[in-house]
Length: 143
Image 1 (spheres, rainbow, N blue to C red):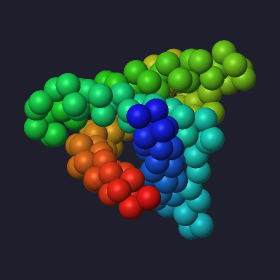
Image 2: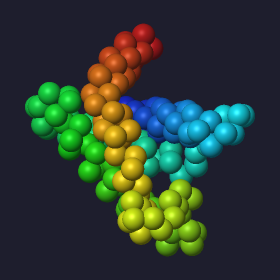
Image 3: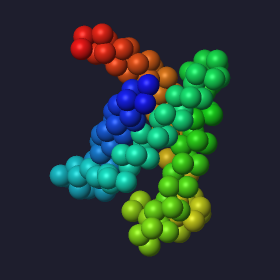
C-alpha cells in the first residue's frame, strides 16, 4: 500500500511539474518570449504529489460529481501552496514562486488570478486520478 502511495505521489508530482512547465511556457509567449520558456522548481515534486494524494482522499470521501468536488479542491490547492511557500521561505529565506506584492497575491504566497486555471485543473483531477488508478492496477497485474 505504501509503495502504491509513493508511486502515485511521484507520478502526480511529475505530472504537476509537466503541467506547470507547459503553463509557464505558454505564459511566456504572452510576454513575447518567443522561445516559449517554461519552468518549475524541484520543490514542486513533493508539493504536487502530496496535494494530489490529499485531493484523492477527499475524492474518495466525498461522493459528489467531479465538477462539484473541484470547488473543494481549489481551496486545498491554495492552502497547500500558501503553507508550502511559507515553509520554504522559513527554510531558504525566499519563495521560489514569489508573486510580488499586488493585491491579488496575499503575502506573495498565492496568486488569486490563477483561480480559473486551478478550477479547470481541479475539474480534470478526478478523471486523471481514475486513469492513474486503472493504470497502476494494470501494471501491478502485469508484473
